[in-house]
Length: 506
Image 1 (cartoon, helix red, strand yellow):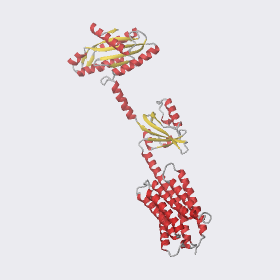
Image 2: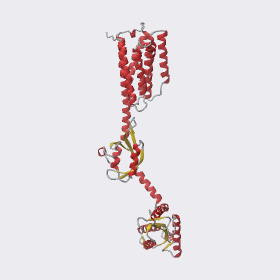
Image 3: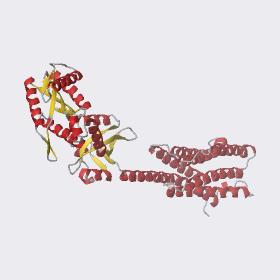
Image 4: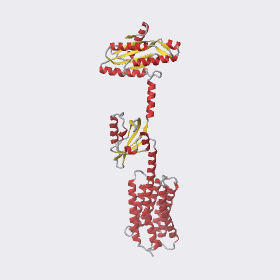
């Protein structure tokens, strides 16, 4: 018959519990978030302390080596249960957490110092183990959709066996006619301790596997989310060398992973983004902050596209930045839509010329430049003579044609740096910038009159029109933009009164 020395078994149990506690402490230290591992470490530390106190019988006072030690065992399993409830995202069982340790501590004290009965103490400890282990099993197996469910079976099996074993031991202790026979050197006693040693060693292993399964499931979900994300995702090291791109990046840019691995994201640069923006980007990241902004990049096939990006540093637990991750969205369509809306807001629908608002903005900008460079500007106010008669006699289609053709002739009569705008029904502004003198304006005015004087051909019919032009000069007549326009308008009406189809200065 196999019989082992009880003190030797106590020492081995103590060593096993200490090793398990150390393993769980390191597991807790390796975690980056609150997942219950800290309570597992505390629980196993309590079990270690209990084993130390029990193995020191004869060295420590009986109160410590029996009452306190057994209470530590119960506290240890209650802490482990609490950690597993947190891990499984279940609310804590506060009544059980407080009632079981308190009741067992009272019973341990009573049946040692008042009514000494070791079998009742064994039954009390076994009952506490059975209750906590059964609760752990229910907690782990009740969540049928948990990604760590398979690993949860192994933890549940270990605690289930431990609870079943101690439940059986408690029943035997209660029905046994011999007091404390389970503590005598025998094969059954040896089996009790050996089973406890095995399970104490299995607890940290299964809990570590459970944590690994949860992390692996989380990593798998994250990996799937990254790979299936509609946003382009790039991960680089701290030097900017690309280590990963997701399929969305490949789809949107045309670059495969092999094309960009180890390279800098500057492979996408088009030259359209200002260097200052990149300087700001890297300085922001170096400070450990997230940078957000837009890029005008180039695809592998040479096509330009717009991206809005959020680039963040990836920090390790010690705060050191190890990588950068960029999440980018293609906003080319949005940019194009914004440009179209802006163009429609600032350009005439019929002629495509700038509107009054845009023309005034350009005039104010031109005046600021002219003031700095001490140059001249001319504002020409142009009105089509007899335009209402064309609409009334020939029709609005003919009127629209005349407006569009006039816009074309005015635009081709001036330089590309000058501005022609439609500011009313048949009214136009022409802004001539950086002009040397008044004579130059006269040449351009006569050129405009000559261009518009040519017959307009519509459906084989010829339409002849004239225009009246009023001219105001900066700084000769005014330095105020609104005043310049007003003076040019007055000069135009002066020509209207004098016979039309001509030009006049203020």
